[in-house]
Every structure is written in structure tokens, then in C-alpha cells.
Amino acid sequence: MGELRPLGEDLNGASRALAEALRELFESLHLSVRRYAARRRLDPGTVSRYLNGTRLPPWQVISDLFADVAEHRGTAVTTEAIELVRVLYGSAVDAASSPKHAVEILEQQLADADHVSRRSSVRGDVLGDALLDRTQRIADLETRLNQLEADRIAEQKRADALAQAHPDVSGLIRERDVLQLEVERLGEALREAQAQRAAAEGRCDLLERQLDAVEQAAAAALPTGPQNMPKILIVDDQPDNLLAMTAVLATLEQELVTVSSGREALKALLDHDDFAVIIMDVQMPEMDGYETCAHIKRRPRTRDVPIIFLTAMGTGSEHSARGYAAGAVDYISKPFDPWALRAKVAVFTSIYLERHSQ
Image (tube, rainbow, N blue to C red):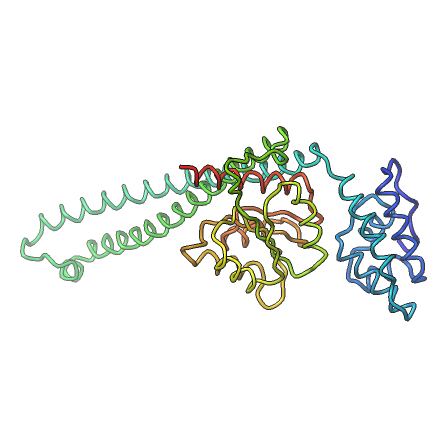
């Protein structure tokens, strides 16, 4: 893993051009792939794939490479060189993206949401059966206690008096109390499973609409109506990311409001009340995406604005669960697919227009 691998086979022209430019920058460092990966705390195999063109790196990786080259040379990389690579990167992103690729991404997300829904449904059934069993057992115990109380001294009405006079009754009372606590616990778990299933079903419906948007090219042909199109709020602390998302979403012909922090996002939401969707980076200084999302959801005025998290940390269950718990409706990993992002935004815009046309 120390040496550069050959360029990948069957690369398209844009991916090849970007890979060649990155390799030229990397080779000027005179480092092995493994050593550079260790320096940047990256996986050597991933760095190798970035440099042979078989995997598109996040722009931050390229920015870090520019910084390392500048430090090694002792002079800043020229603006022209950075702009050239930026253009190559944009072309590679566009070339790597296609409706087919976006459909694959959305179908995988749909499969994941369906899995959560089915798993929650099964868990709900199990919890429901257990809850019914415990409830019936409590009813049986109550009947037995009532019978014992009637058969014994009529004036002994209080449970503690019964327990003191009749140890067998005391055991029944303890068993009943334990079952009642278990019923409360099972009831709470059942409500959580039902809520999880409802949320998963909602995501499934949303993803199916997004798939339709890709397949029908609706992302480029939104309903225009009376030209009162809602805005899109983009939140990211990296200017390059804001620039990339602005370029991707410009074809939707909606006003894009870009801010670089969670606090600026909260201010923008106070200044405007017609956002169809918020696209928010998770990793931001001071106030990260999760905290910003929580603030937005606590405000009655903004709690219903859908939030899409954009993250370089992947869409594993631990990250997505935290995002959904904070109030996000969707997750997109970097580098993002332009078709998929446009489809998601198009659907939320359509939902906004549907609600405000009633």
C-alpha cells in the first residue's frame, strides 16, 4: 500500500483527469500512500482509491492535499491551480452522477427504512403479545384476590391487613404489583416501537416520492405556480461545500440562502418563513448540526421545516438514529450525488407547495 496503484480501468474522462491532477500533487510530496494516510488519519486503501480514480474523494480531502503540498514546498498553491482542480472535481462529480446511480442510492435507503419498519412491526407484535399476557395474568390475580377477600373476614379491606393476616395473599399482591410494573414498561416499549415503525413508514413514503422524482426528472421540472417558490436554506461551515451545493441546486430555480453556522441558520429562520427544506452539515464548530436541529425543532414557528443532514461520517445506524432523534427527516453522505440531492429537495418543495395551496 506504499506505492501508487495504476489508474483504474474504464474510468470516464472526467474521473481520469481529476485523478491525474491529484496524483501529480501527491507525488510532489515524495511520500508513500501509507505514510500520507497515517498523517491524515485516513485508511490507506481509501487514499489509494482516491488517487487511482476509482473513488471520488470529498473536497475536504483535496483541500488538505493542497495544504500539505503548500507546506512541503514552502509556497502557497496558486489560485489558478486550485481553480483548475475545482473544475475537474465538478466535472468528475457530474460524470459520476446519473439518474441510475441516484436510484440505486435511494433504493438502498428505501430498503433500510423498510427493514426498520418490519423490525419495529415484529417487535411491536412481540411486545403486544407480552403486554396482553401480563394484563390477563393481572386480571386473574385480581379475581383470586377478590375471592380470597370475600371468603375471609369481610371487614379486612386494606391490602396490608390482608397481607399481614394471610401470607398467601401477600404473595399474590406482590406478584400483581410486579406484573403492573412490567405492564407499564412493556406499554412504553410498545409505544416506542409503534412510533419507530410510523417514522420508518413515513421515510418509505418519502423515498418512494424521491424515486419518482428521479425517474420522471421532476427535479428539473417543478411546478411553477404563481412564482411563489419557497426558499432552500443551506448550512455548512465550509465555503467550498456551500459553493458545490449552490451549483447543484441552482437548476431548481429557487432562492438559495447559504449560511456558515448554526447560529446564522437560526437567524435566517427568524428573517424568513418560507423555507421548503434545510440542508445542514452535521460537523460544524460551536453548534453542530444535531444541536442546531434541536433548536429549530423546539421553535413552534420552524419545527415543521424538514431538515436533511449532510455528513462525511457515513450513514450508519448510530449516526442516522441520532439524526432522526434530533428531528432530521433524511441523511445524505458526502460526496453527495447531485441527482439524489435535487430529487430530495424537489419532493420537499412539492410538499411545501401542496400544503400552502390548500
